[in-house]
Image 1 (cartoon, rainbow, N blue to C red):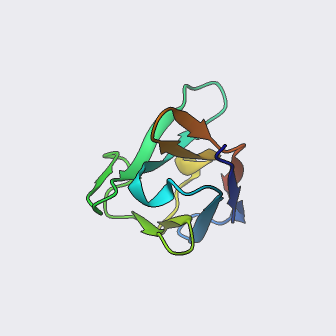
Image 2 (image 1 turned 90 degrees about the horizontal axis):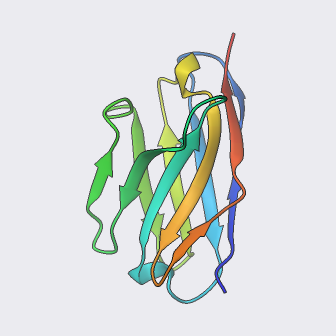
Length: 114
């Protein structure tokens, strides 16, 4: 059983920064594909960024150059550093792990507003 717990969300002004964390239980973390998704009100869930077990990354065009995904395998933790935040980044952010099946956290709310 894999459990994912996100933290680090909150209210931030446009242009500000936040770092999200996702703590995972279980022994498959280091061999899994990990990702951050987000869902804004009235919209479908979308991929923000993901990182493979080997460390390669990919990003949605809307966050390239502003967000950085990283993983700390010994700590079983996934991160998302978000800089230059915009109001359109407002959403619930979800941690995702893919190994034998999809695992999701419950999400953390990020609100970008002045």
